Amino acid sequence: MYTAINLNGRSPPNAPLAWQRDARLLSERRPSHAQETPVFLLVTRKLANLQLRGKIPFMNQDKLLRNSVIFMVVGISFIAALYMMTQGGSEIVSEPLASVPLTDVAETAVLFEIVPQQSEVQFALDETLRGSDITVVGRTNQVAGQIAADFADLSTAQVGVIKVNARTLATDNEFRNTALRGHILQADDYEYITFTPTAVSGLPASINSGETATFTITGDLTIREVTQEVVFDAEVTAVSPTQLSGSASTAVNRADFNLTIPSAPGVANVGEVVQLHIDFVAVPSDNNE
Figure 1 (cartoon, rainbow, N blue to C red):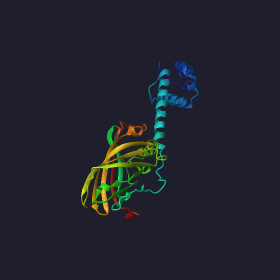
Figure 2: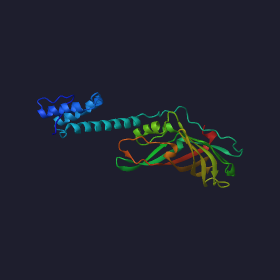
Figure 3: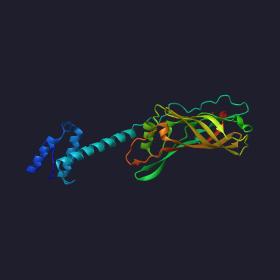
Figure 4: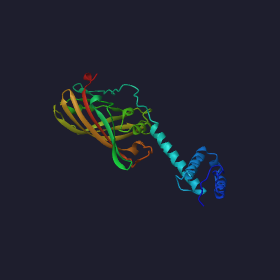
């Protein structure tokens, strides 16, 4: 027998006897906690009203109960996902960006400073968004760092700590940005992502203006409270005695840094591998003040 059922053991006005019986059975068979749950009552009442208006097929009391529970679970899951996506960290920086000063710089070396306005840090990873495979790219120009180099003797070259303000990383989606600053990077508590070089390998003995050197930089990458050793492949051009331009790239696994992605409607198959890249311009530090 398929019926349209009202709540709390009451049948619709002028309802057949069969409907009244099913309404009583529904009231008796509901668990006590369900009877007392406002959300359950609201969902079940909505389904019953839709039946009466002919918007959905008639359901017996068991099916109505089951569908009410399903609607509640789906709704709660959606609300939880929306909460995770909208409870993000601040995008306001706590202080002006500043480099960590290099020490023990060779007397003949020039101390170069990364110029944020002409530089950019990026991350990229793959995901499926509403059934389409895409590559998500986040970027910021809030990067700082120093490089010490004597073009005539690169054996004394140094690369200082590279700092990136995590609060300023942004993609093309504001919901994603909120989740990035909040749940993923926890930027309120961990404002900076840092890379601390420990070794530079493969540099030539010297370089002239207009020439490009390729080499690797090994160091400790810290994201939130997790630090892992990574190796960047780097390329730097000595544009002039007073300017360097270059780039560096590496790939890391999200799991190595405990970076979890909150569930979001329409998002699936988020990649485990994250590509990291920096393009930079650096000038003597006294020119960048």
